[in-house]
Length: 74
Image (cartoon, rainbow, N blue to C red; front, top):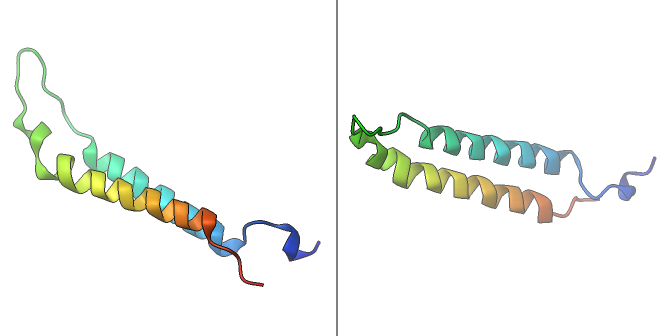
């Protein structure tokens, strides 16, 4: 088959996979223990959970958007 029939090439799929991996890492950075009715956990307001993790997720989503709109080279 001719390669021109495909909308994505190998690089697009690699960029999509890397972007998805970055998003998963961002969500893992957000994860952690939670506060309950009997115990307060101050870690829910840590910089890792409210600043770093959302930025990592945003970068992952932006890289995935770039991978989708990137035009394959002929």
